[in-house]
Amino acid sequence: MTKEQFDTLKAIVRGEQIKPPVALLVDSPWIPPFAGIDAIEYFTEPEKWLDANLKVVQRFPNVIFIPGFWVEYGMAIEPSAHGCKVSWWKDSPPSISPVLDDISEAERLRVPSPQNDGLMPFVLHLQRWANERIQPLGYAIRIVSARGPLALATFLRGITEFLVDIKIEPEASHRLLDICTDTVIRWLDAQARNISTAKAILVLDDIVGLLSPKDYEEFAHPYLKRIFDAFPNMLKLYHNDANVEPFAERLAETGFHILNFSHLIDPGELQRRMGEKVVLMGNVPPLQVMVEGTPDDVRRSARRSLERTNGRIILSAGGGTNPGTSAENIDALVQSANEWQG
Image (cartoon, rainbow, N blue to C red; front, side):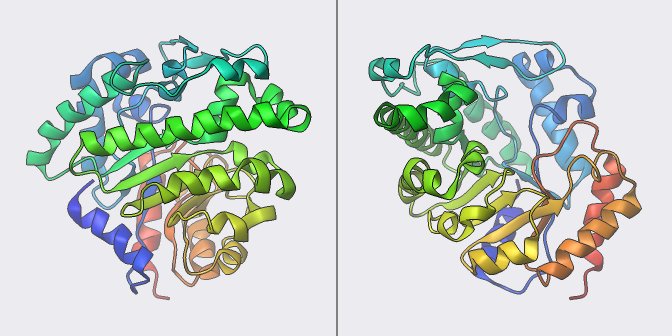
């Protein structure tokens, strides 16, 4: 990410009247095939990883890529530090096997050391390696990232198992969420200390959107707030493309500034409910339009999002960037933002 792009994010969060920026959350499902390499090459050959990321930012100079030059191994980093088995595939990100057969086993978990455990040390090393190489080109790693506490809990326990646990074993579930929350904070802090150019955090946690309002209050809100409160001087981004409508107002109170949300939610209504403290990032359908649609489809969908929010939106996909998203459709998204006259 360039300094100018990061300044644009800060400007729209401050409420300045600027032309709607375009941003896309991109990672290992989309970047390797776009760059013409396979996932194993992307994860194991730093020079190819760097070339792939440079190809993306240079092809789309008017797109803010979130988080940008993301050193990641799919969703395996935090689970690996807790001992989860990670299985690797040539043409897709790795899969993770749960490590807890019963929620009571959460008692044995400890917050991992980012300098020593799992894939975390590799990430820290590659972040430094990459930042040294991209800064002379005008880029830097400005956002560091982590999976959120409920997402991590489900990797450790299994999605279905964890959602059952919070109903029948709430105390043990809170113990697991405490460990996961401390893991997220320690991991984000280690990355921020590792990279002097990092001035923002990104937390990704779709599992929150699977909860009822009551369960959200008990099992999500305090943990998300604890994470965002731990970084008072950072720009804070949150990705959740599940259903956050039932508790939108409360979610906004956790303290993030930018929300990448589901294309199934009306951006105008969500903006009204979350208020000025949150800037929305969306809301073009990532599969039905960004992958399967035409550039005209993208332009129509983008205009609807701009009209519904009076242009105070970071124009993006309503979720991550899916494999198969074409350059032409990304160009159409940029064109829509440039042509907005609201």
